[in-house]
Length: 279
Ligand code: GLN
Image 1 (cartoon, rainbow, N blue to C red):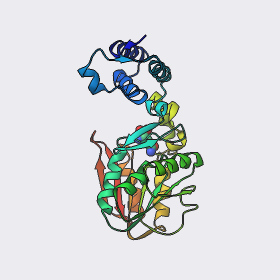
Image 2 (tube, helix red, strand yellow; image 1 turned 135 degrees about the vertical axis):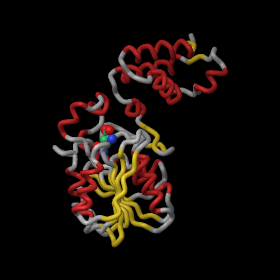
Image 3 (tube, rainbow, N blue to C red; image 1 turned 90 degrees about the vertical axis):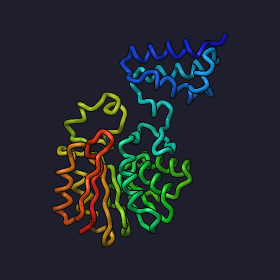
Image 4 (cartoon, rainbow, N blue to C red; image 1 turned 60 degrees about the vertical axis):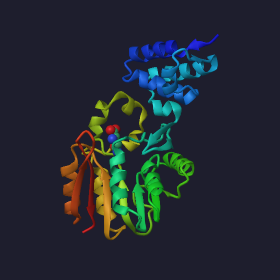
């Protein structure tokens, strides 16, 4: 017996709605398109479309996980970032749309010049891999303290056919050589604020990737101070920052002699990226 897609979507959207999942029908369609060959666009042209039992069961199993607030990206094990596909699991921060602003700024800066780039705290590898994908002539290194995160990043490097070099390192501990660009989206949430994060972020993103210490600034402080020894003359440093951290991070940059500090906003008009030149 076949089931009408229309009924299936309605029933499962209602289940997610009842569990307090926002954008329930968006999630149902993403799951349908992931597990089956049903396309939302084709469904609108043929409202009598049906879904087979096996596919229905697969989607229903995923809906059960979603009801437990497991992020959709972790259920299907992947997400999109700047048009590329990235594998994700519980060991990496799910790439955020806002982080695309950071990649945009780095890509604008490097263009097609030959540059050595270091992405510190790479997680899924989304920043390093996208930059490497978009720019020719780069030598991109990516580091993380977590071996489990690096395993995911390496898979993503293969998946996207990029050529990033990976180093397991606690910040600069195992980093060798000098770079023209250092980029990082480090953990920047104040420890006490983690409790008030969105349930799904708090429960399912790795705290190792979120917790920036009491002030939220621990990683900026260390990276900015030590980066001076790892940047070439005129080298640039780029960070993602929390919406309320531009002034504090800017001060750390100034205290360390960096020049030409620029802050960029995200689409919600929150400060999101800061970059500066080594002094
Ligand atoms: N932007 C992420 C969030 O909102 C935090 C990322 C980070 O700490 N680097 O949860």
